[in-house]
Image (cartoon, rainbow, N blue to C red; front, side):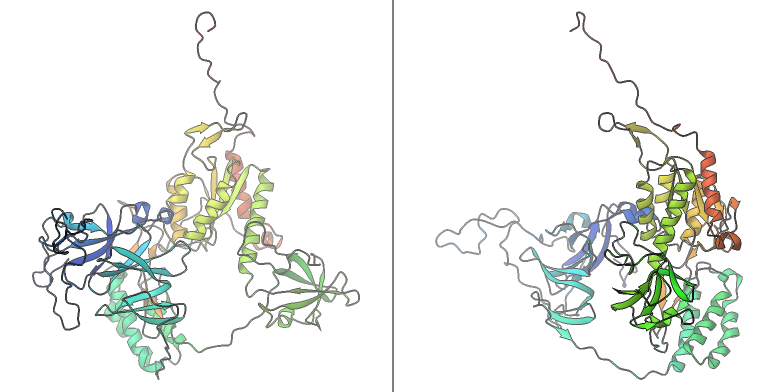
Amino acid sequence: VWSRETGEAHALTDALADANSPSWDRGGKHLYFLASTDVGLASSWANTSAMTARPTFGAYVAVLRADGEAPFPLESDEEPAKGDSATSGRGAGAGASSRGGEKKDGNDAGDAVEVRIDFQRMDRRIVALPVPTRRYTDTYAGEAGVVFLTEMPENGNGQTVHRFEMSSREAKSFVTGASGVAVSGDGKKLLYRSGRNWHVVETARPPEPGKGRIEVALRAWIDPAQEWPQIYDEAWRLQRDFFYDPGMHGNDWKATYARYRPLVDHVKHRADLTYLLDQVNGELSVGHSFVGGGDMPELDTVRVGLLGADLEAENGRWRITRIFTTESWNPSLEAPLDQPGLRVAEGDYLLAVDGVEITVADDPYRALDGTAGRQTVLHLGDAPSMEGAWTITVKPLRSETALRQRGWVEDNRRMVDSLSGGRVAYAWIPNTGGPGVGSFDRYVFAQQDREGLVVDERFNGGGLLDDYMVDLMTRTLRAAITNEAGGPPMPLPGGILGPKALLVNELAGSGGDYFPWVFRHENAGPLVGMRTWGGLVASCSHYPLVDGGRVTAPCTAVFQPGGSWIAENEGVPADIEVWMDARSVAEGRDPQLERAVAEVMSRLGPPGSNVITPPPFPRPSRRPGGR
């Protein structure tokens, strides 16, 4: 708590719990907040291991005054004797009182509430609210003696708002699926968003479903040309105030402003302004400098349907040469031509779409325009003629990126399996966020029977700074444990403990720069491929601009203590440089992947050399006489 009058700051909690989201009770005697003691690895927010933590929080109330009453005093369970006052409190015990006996604090808009805080022994006046620990995110004070707790459920489908009342000592579900929660100044109204709708409801009791919905139909006349000078100034200031280097990488930032400012008067489109801001920020020569969004003209969306297939011109028609499948265990993927009961196979001809015949003179995707997400009839044949053709009904996709990406990953896995004779595993790490860690867990631990591992971080989109994956890959055999009688022993720790190689390329960056850097730092294996992108001055926030656009101001950089900055504008070079030459790619080969497998195989011993066997089973000594 910081005092404006004295300029002094006082800590109300200690460092042994992660305390946050304070809110002042409107009675002036209490402070609500959240605290967790199981934050664990989540405290290191920049690392991938932080994602493995699921901290829960308790809700607390601090009594601000040293002479303040206990928020939840003991209550008498005795009936008053005949003639006694029902409110005498007899038999309640020292310090106990009857519920509701205290005069309610003023809470009207005109009431002035004096807040006095006694900081000494504050830790002994912090009491947990009688609610379960959960994934609470915030507290919001309602009327005096009421606090709202927002909880993020495991399914992540909006927040649940709980209403806790001090007098009843109970929490009740208030609304579910909420976002954007706020409480009015007098504590009597709560604003929340559910889906695309906004609601304002009374805080005194849970609202009826759908009640309090307000119509938001705000319109405004905006002249973008009048906003552009302000956006330019704001973007320049954001870099000045938040860029990680106060010296602006040696730039005279005021001179940079003056050099580019006259060009704002010549901007005729938001894209022009975005380009101009990119040029200004480009003076800093830093990777994570992004400009985007803003008021752009609305354009019609093209809804071309995609079949999840490769088509090639042959015999005057379009022939299906590959059908992409959902592979296995990918419930979120859809493959229009990979459905049970569909009469379609690789080698069939696509002859017509919704009855309109097509040949190689026609663009097949023009015929599929407007079919995304709609049932569409395809005319197929095993010969390049409508004679003998048959029809199937499919629902084309809006995007087949995920389908093709999974196909690429599984093709690589099968290639590594083939080249290594089943001895080496393959795992692709698309980024250093949730999908990347999830992909690592999926592919590495499903192939623990393999002796080596090729990790592919090509095209890695970054995210966090990895400590989880590399730490697991650099562990060594410590022990083993027997399984069922006669079964193979299980190594401890789990994972693939043999040799490894990491594939890198120029389109892996940010967290995709740090991942190979730390892989090399920990001597996990060789880097194969090409130098990475080179961007480890990261952007903490995408700052909003007045027209809904955004700009980054790179604010945090990675360096080696006692050494130098890591990777920025340099990237991480490969130990073994391998080009993806055009001929190899045209032939369907992957020279980088092939070399990585060869490197791992060269480090493996003969087949069976890493088999773990238990020692001879013990034979306890027998007593004399065989007893």
